[in-house]
Length: 228
Image (cartoon, rainbow, N blue to C red):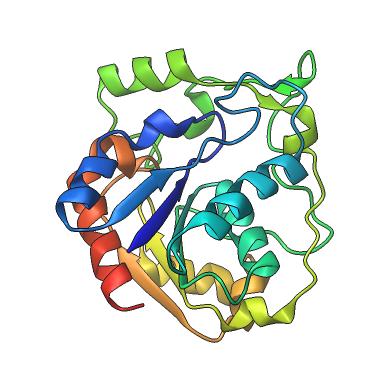
């Protein structure tokens, strides 16, 4: 199956380097999508540019793909589903929920010199980063790409309610499936409340399983793809 991998904030396609060969060994065709402004040197990229990059990968896939979106990019994956509800087989969300129409994409941290740099590990202490080794921390921080301001502050626009028909799998790293269900029921994931088919899958990791549990993540994605 075609599997499109979309990294969250500050990550480029190399974040999936350990996941891609594991998925290939399982018979899939994975592609780590390079996001404008996060891997191609374009500091002026916009949220629309990132959506366009994901849609181009969807359109080029041999068959309707499984989109795998991590963290803030869960919203980016949802935007792609909204734009191509008949061309996406399933959406897997890792460690996040999609924002709704009219909300900012990812205005989480301070903007400096036109971009949102990685804020250091302070905001992520605890369950998010508990399984990261010192080497993981050093690598992620050293390779983090400041997110262009027009991406971080871009406004989410959703237009096609057929997005709710596309199956969704919520992969729960630093939180449990039970917690995810509670948060969604409490209104923290309003888009998923309306989704017709939502599954919850646990993975024993922190927020970045592509670095700490790549083989297990690949196995979960293989199982997700097999149910599409």
